Amino acid sequence: MDLHYGAENEAFRSEVRDFLADNWPLPGPDAKRDKPDQILEFRRRAIARGYLCRNIPKRYGGSEQEPDVLKAQILREEFAEARAPGEVRGIGPSMLVPTLLERGEEWQKEKWVADTVTGKVIWCQGYSEPGSGSDLASLATRGVLEGDGESAEWVINGQKIWTSGADSADYMFCLTRTEPEASKHAGISYLLLDMHQPGVEVRPLKQMTGGSTFNEVFLSDARTPKDWIVGKRGEGWIVSRTTLKHERNSIGNAATTSAAFEALVRLAKKTRVDGVPALERPEIRQRIAALEGYVLSHQYSGYRQLTRDARGQANGVITLMNKLIGNNIGDQQARIAFDLLGDDGLLMAGERALPGGPGPRNSRAWVTSYMGSLGGSIAGGTRNIQRNVIGERGLGLPRDAAANRSSSKK
Ligand SMILES: Cc1cc2nc3c(=O)[nH]c(=O)nc-3n(C[C@H](O)[C@H](O)[C@H](O)COP(=O)(O)OP(=O)(O)OC[C@H]3O[C@@H](n4cnc5c(N)ncnc54)[C@H](O)[C@@H]3O)c2cc1C
Image (cartoon, rainbow, N blue to C red; front, side):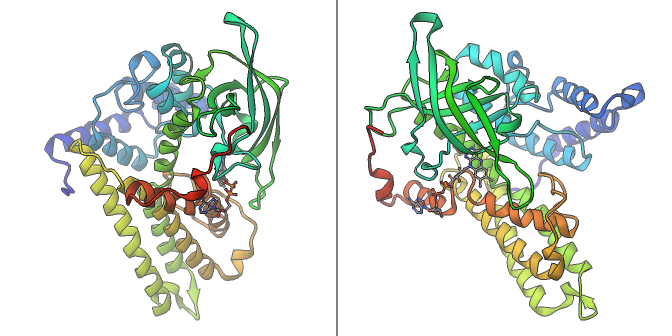
């Protein structure tokens, strides 16, 4: 592992810094535009310079740069330092776009990729159902093809749950059982669905933070054109693996873990216990020092993965561990923070710490972060499921007996 970027990359870093100094915040009359307009304009300039949407071909609105993990890392560092808008976040850009690029039809990429990476259209992920979470392949939402030729449509009936952002989404990528006679994994198709239609009803779920970031979605004769399918009919399970791979990697980000740890140290310095800063008390110091070992290991594992990526070597099983380790560290951080907060831990959740930002900055943000960390360890596959994946794919252990059981004819 070499932790230096080298002269050529440092020269690239200077160029990026100059670009950011000249363009964010936007100078001149552009600074008077509405904030969303300014962000859009900045992103347009950054794409034109080759700094954003680097892995997206130009014909789909990206900047189509040669893959270079070190340059990509420098860009993340410098954009974060300048607090400049980076890539549009969300389920669409991080999960659907890589899936379309890998497995979509040409017309699907042309129709959706550019609008998704610029945030013009919003997507939600319709996988989980009330009876199908970890055992996702047992899902029961039915899709039936009606009509002939070009005008044929899928008619979809069923219920999705925990659908993040469904209340503001324009489209859903939806796992649907289209071949009820096939075995459970082989009977699913990956359909794209317009959310703005009478057959789609979204009911927000109230969370303990007070917010409603996820929803129930009821599909009652919802319709979608025959060719709004990614991959072939009955191949939705394989396509969904592409999406989940990207979800799990984005959840286990070491930079987020390190930012939250630094915020925890700040909290321990600020909080006073018996008249002295909590960080000076041995029992707190020891807990934080033990945690720091895990945070640093996670960070160095990230560097190791980056180095292997830069050398064109596969990371294999290591990437399977990122989400689980990130979740475990998040838990321990939250527990120490709660002990430090004392009575303030009873406050209502409030401000959110933004991804890529400096971590929670006040008591309410810590409460929100704690509550969010519980959800984070379930979303994209629970800890037990991650352990199964590591055991089976990483260590070559026998397959989970429950997952092997077939429930065809659902
Ligand atoms: C914040 C958040 C956002 C989400 N967003 C979305 C979204 O946008 N779209 C979407 O489709 N879904 C979403 N989900 C749903 C998420 O994917 C599921 O909650 C998750 O897959 C677990 O399913 P479940 O809730 O049905 O739990 P279950 O599968 O019922 O699991 C219950 C418990 O049993 C354990 N368990 C189950 N099977 C096994 C096994 N084989 N071996 C060992 N232990 C097992 C689990 O680990 C867990 O502890 C979201 C969830 C959260 C928390």
